[in-house]
Image 1 (tube, protein in one colour):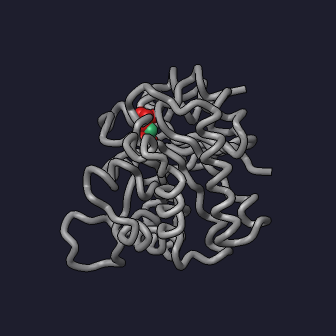
Image 2 (cartoon, rainbow, N blue to C red; image 1 turned 135 degrees about the vertical axis):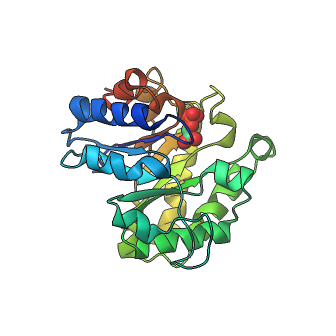
Image 3 (spheres, protein in one colour; image 1 turned 90 degrees about the horizontal axis):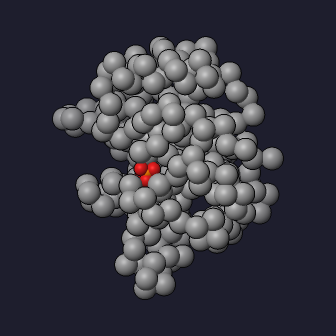
Length: 250
Ligand code: PGA
């Protein structure tokens, strides 16, 4: 049984006071839920404080990126080990904004995935096609490549610490959500790719989140789609009024 996993990606939003207030409200409202997993991914500079604000609750704290290097002369970078050191337990890697705005390649993302796992962090590995790729009918090809290359060198025990997020780029921040049918199709396909890379039994344990304009009014239908095990939420994760109903979807 895969426990639903709802994660909020705050991106480069909020400030210190609002981040802290949101974390504290979430702690109060859903900090002891054990039937689903909840995580927030604040900007780097607030991680330490948010980890402390959520300590002792069930809400996990994730980062939005990490370096592919262990340590050294890499100005501006943050290592997976540093994240672990301040109590972060999870990192989002391969987000489409990293891939498309900052030119991150599958190979770079794979190095980050392996660094994160070695440092003891869990990983949310994002995959997703551009609108032009969907229109050309190459969605499966794109997400299969991103998944396969992203997981290169990741063995079966480590895969237990990886969640996949399917985020069609055309649905991110656009208000245009994939239909539950579209999400279900790709999620089912991705699970098949995982089965080919590992085994059927292992693939059946991996959670696959959907991301892209998830809102309180579409979460239930998305979660009802086959192989959708959670959500990676951007805009709607910035306010308690919209994130809480997503966490508490029925
Ligand atoms: P959105 O972002 O919910 O604002 O579309 C999702 C994401 O990028 O993870």
